[in-house]
Each structure stands twice: as C-alpha cells, then as structure tokens.
Length: 295
Image 1 (cartoon, rainbow, N blue to C red):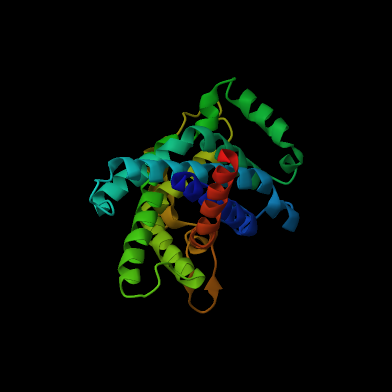
Image 2: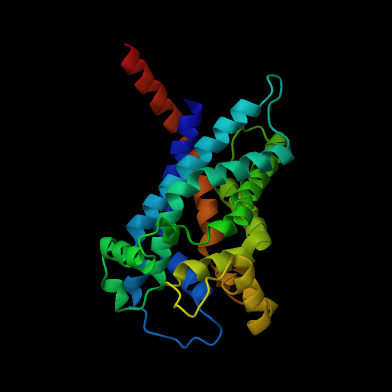
C-alpha cells in the first residue's frame, strides 16, 4: 500500500509541475533543438507554448508513477531486514533501473511531444492523431521512429537516480538535526532544486543530443541516421564545446543580473514538494479505502 501511495503522490506532483511549467519546457526544447545559425522563425505565438500540454501531463504522470513504483518496490525488495535504508551506491542502481522501467511506455509520448513543441507554426495545426500518422509514414510503419533517443537514456537514466539519491541522502542528514520527521514545503522545494541541478549538469550534453534527434523528421535518402555520439561530435566540431550546453540556462535556477528560470530544476523541485506534502494524505486514503472494502 505504501508503494502505491508513494507512486500516486509522485504522479500527482509530476502532473501538476508539468502543466504549470509547460511553457518554459517548450521554450527550452526549442532552444535545444536549434542549430547555432538557425534564423529566428515565427513559432505560433504565446498559445503555441501550450501545444501538447495535455499529452505532457499524461506522459509526466505515467513516467513519475512507474518510476516511483519501481523504485519503492525494488528498494523494499533489496532492503535487509535490519537496515533502514539502502547504501548510496545501491540507491543509484535502483534509481537507474527504475528509470529504464517506464521508458517503453513513456518514450513514444516524449518523442511526439518534442515534435509538437518544435514544429513550425503551419505544422502545429496537426492534431495528435495526424502527427502520429505523419511520423508513422516517415518511419515506414516502424515503431523504432517513436523510440528516437533511446540510446541516450543509458546515460540519462542516471539523472533521476542522482537527483533522487541526492535528495534522499541530504534529507536524512538534514532531518537528523530537526525535531520534525518531515520537510516543510520550502525545504523540500529547495532540496529538490539543488538535487536536480547537480544531476542536470552531469548529463546535459546527452539531453541536448536526444532533443536534436527527436525533433528531426526522417532523414533524406542521402543522409545516414545520426547516433547520439555522432551528434555530440558534430556539435563540438561545428559549434564548439559550448554548443553541448545550449539551453542549459533555462535548465537551472540562477540568480545573476536577473533570474533565469528553467523547468528542469523547478519542475523537479515542485514535483518533490507536492509529493512530500500529499503522500501522507494519499496513504490515509488508501487505508480508508481498504478498510471500507474489507468491512
């Protein structure tokens, strides 16, 4: 029951965060997909920033539920009877496997959402179903076209693992010196943002390469499909090492001359904040439901 409650509360937090911060997510994706010399184009105005928001909410809800369900289940399975928590190394392994667990269902949605976010204004009139048909035709009826960027996840799966592990470890250390057994909303938000920022810095070049691959329609006959390493090499060769981090500024929360807000850190922090605050209520709801069913 606790596993289901944890996964459900995380899914609710992920859904809320994705909807609230979706315009920033769209801007970030467009920035990452563009080449250095791409001319500015009319991308449909303010409303285009919400193109695909419903599908993003569904994708985020699904991925967060499956991730936390797998993470909590694996943790309970591996936890020794006398141990209260897993080691940091084991936490990383469990987090990595939990992230892989949701990809077969969530990655196709992610690929379609990326195409919606980066489409030119004329193409944005396509419905979700029409875009699916277009992508299906582009890839000659092969499902592989809906799993673009999958190879990047062998590295990217470390991101939520590092993030959640860092959050949990710092949380335990922090709560040792407090009378309370839980974090406040602002504490959960700040710890979540810090954990996400660290994880993002480590894997960001692969995030950008994945977006470039997903945003591109089918290559012409004269082009050979680019792999993630080839994209990274091309970016460094043509645009320099800094190109690997284009779009990073929206990915982190900074305070310099003016603040730059990016959905990466904010979304993760908001999701963890909501999860921490509602998990007890979700657990209580499941308990009451179970009592009602058994009576």
